[in-house]
Length: 109
Image 1 (cartoon, rainbow, N blue to C red):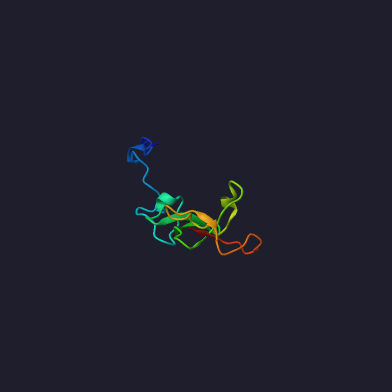
Image 2 (tube, helix red, strand yellow; image 1 turned 90 degrees about the vertical axis):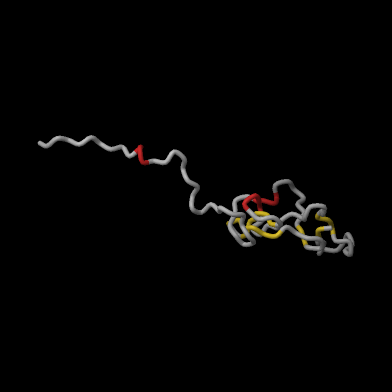
């Protein structure tokens, strides 16, 4: 029998820090890019659900249709989420519609 060589564990070759996974964006995402949270997206965009993934979508501007949730947590149930209204705007009932109008749209105002 020959002399046995010492086993190599390979720990010397491992880096001290684990590099970021290749799928993680290194720059802020543009409209339509995949994201995990709004901080992954460029200015003026938020991270919102689109089908079963999340992408960067534009923050809503004045006059655009928005979603107002009656129940806390209902935002997570949508498969096509909208971003919130831009800073200084609120999602309010469109003024032209009466209270009995079934098409009561909310817009950023």
